[in-house]
Amino acid sequence: MKILCISWDSDQTNYMENLFFPIFSGLQKELDCQFFVLQFSWAETREVNRINALAQEFQITFQQQPVRRKPHPVLGSLLTTQLGQNVIKRMVAKHGITHLMPRSTMPAMMVNSIFKWAKKRNLKIVFDADGLPIQERVDYAGLKENSLQYHWLKKTETKLLKQADLVLVRSVLAKDVHLQNIGQAHKDKFFKVSNGRIKSRFKPDPALREQIRKELNVLPHAMLWLYSGSIGPQYLLSEMLQLFDSYHIHHPESKFLFLIRNPTFLAEAIPSRLKHAIILKSVSYEFLPAYYAAADIGVSLRKPAPSLVGIAPIKVSEYLLAGLPIISSRGIGDLDEMIGEESYCFMYPSGNNEELNHWLLGIKEISRENIRAQSIPSFALENSINEYKHALKSSNL
Image (cartoon, rainbow, N blue to C red; front, side, top):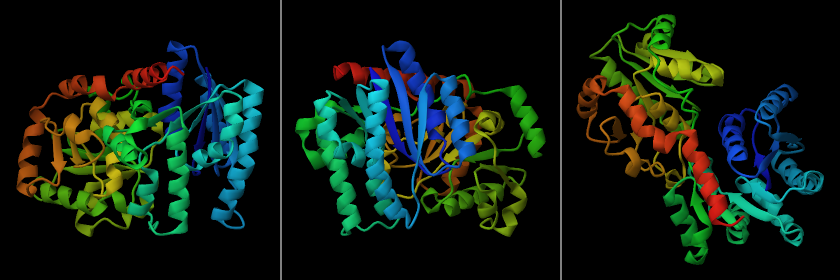
């Protein structure tokens, strides 16, 4: 198998090299397959070169295709999808590609346009449907369900969901949503795959914990909260700060560490009474595990919305492998069923602040090694590789 993964990204995403490269590399070692990546993005040359260098380390062939942003981002994107069809065809011919793996909506659009061409060459189509990206645009980005753009995107997704030989989703609930749309006749080609992380990177580390807490000026006994990832209205920043504030009032030595790309934006949103207790940092991916080791609790909140059932937050895998108890929103993917009843997980919203504070008082008695041990089977990279392998083998692709 020679599999071409096709993605469509902005100028700042890092999931390809941090999530997919390790999974693809693991599959290359365990299956008779080779991965190629075609990434459409508007990243700068320096960023493209960085990703390409990492791809070479994983023995993955990488190519970036610029996404046009003029005369208007929408028009530029449409033109890029037209040109992208020929780029895909050239890569198929050059490398002897046997499988196309479009990820999410825009790559699906390109593959739909060349579907007959692909089938004449006996190419297999593996559609990585991701979460529920179109519904997510409705929930958080203002896309209207009665708009032409919505119907156009939905038609694109539905067409490939039906035509693909294999569909990958991140939750059982996402599979249910799609099958309600396209019919149960397609159920056997749907497979859930996880966003596993490298367990040797994210783990409890007492030495690093001491070192980083000194760097951050956090007392050894103080509770250090952690949030890692993007900041936006769907991530409930105000609620995170309110929860921390209710704890901080009674534990003034506690701190909240935010590992984010743009600390300046968040700095303006922090109430003055909490500024001394909030730590804002932007660090490279390779340094994240050290800061996880310094923390006592991980936070992963999401604004309630229909699209939540389709996602599997990468940060949750990282928190749990690092042995961190977590505060998580209800209704995120399959997490309620997977960890919702565990003692190391507080599901938000639940009860009141007193209930949360009572839970927080007890988490220091929970072994971080036990949290990690319980989480490895579901949240480590090896599980993701096995799930992808099972999907490819079960579909006889």
